[in-house]
Length: 267
Length: 248
Image (cartoon, rainbow over all chains, first blue to last red; front, side, top):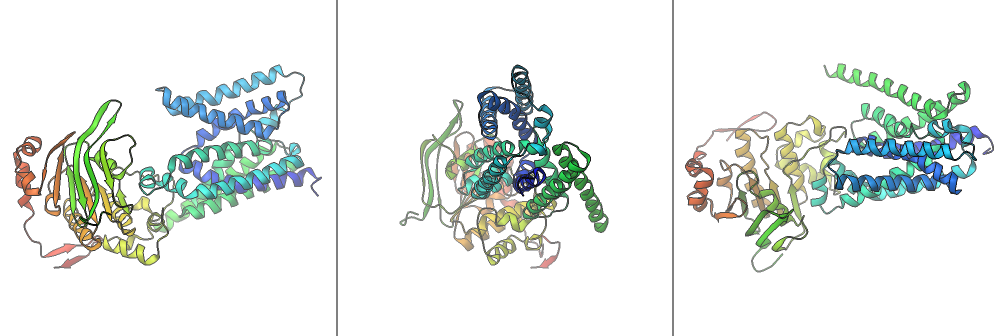
């Protein structure tokens, strides 16, 4: 069964959606969407390094993204530039450096479109193992830091006063973000992975009144996006990443109708 | 807790320096069980810093801080909750601890916000939110409560009510309270010991002693001494937070 590329892509997509749901909630709650974007842009550099040194792609992306996160924290402390400027600086320079390096690697054939936007043909059995094991590990760690992370998302000082360790939770969460970007790059692509984190979550926000419901709806939204997106990618021969994200967008638009309804009910 | 004298936290000549600038220095006081200690002083006088020293937030402070309890409830000064997070009052109560429904209900009732239990935090008024914060702090049955400007956003009559409530909490839970306020108007009647700060301790003592202290008058003006007597009149009814009127 796993010999069929479409089944592999589907299984990969399910694994990714299960993880991006809860992580995406924290990205939205903590206003980290641009931060996620920066990490994702740096992933391309990770890919090129992996190719030139014949290294595992996911591991390479993970290491580069984590490095970029560390550099960001360092620059935030050392310079007077606002965070969004630093994020832009890192996002675009790492993307540019990545593309320049690809230019030099003439001896390797690259599918740049595949890297940027995802490719369902590219998912092999190894990727499935990385996605499901890596994803499982991410969820396990997230469960472990959930309480301090959630409490400090609501209010940093309260969490600290009540004996939790918000800084450690934040650092671990950053690593988890780098990890999910690393494992989902093949299916969704560098430029659209943040969309996978944010859009199903944004949809979930529209129809949830508790954080728990938001996490559940975010996962469901991600799963629906993967299913419908991949089927239409197959049907219309479109790249997988954009198809998934477009589906997520449609779900978001549908969820807006629900908001409108609730507002009307209130009046 | 030290058994002989009910002391919960003791500051001895404590201070904190940031970027070579003293935020506050030379502060000494103790908070005991069942007593309310109030820190007053103008903006930037180091009140919140002092509270955070007492809470043990900072590393590398000057002087000594001895804490004899770990059961601390804290209401921070500035609390901004991001409304991208759909959070009900009940979820907020259970944020860091698993509390039984009864405990949550009791705490919310004692600060008069039980009717808001299933409301979304984003829909509360400033005053309601302060009461929820207070309920949250007392639900853990703390031995020491640190309240940093607990009446922010509460209107004038609500303010007096809040201080009455804080007095009641101190008596019911027999906990020590470290209260911070920048205004003296209502705080005086509900306190056992006042520390007047302005980067250092200007003066301290019972509310009456402080109110007639020369340095206090210099800091807050002559009028401030008279605030003590303003609230000594009685109402024959009270307005509860859900808008009902109760006869006394």
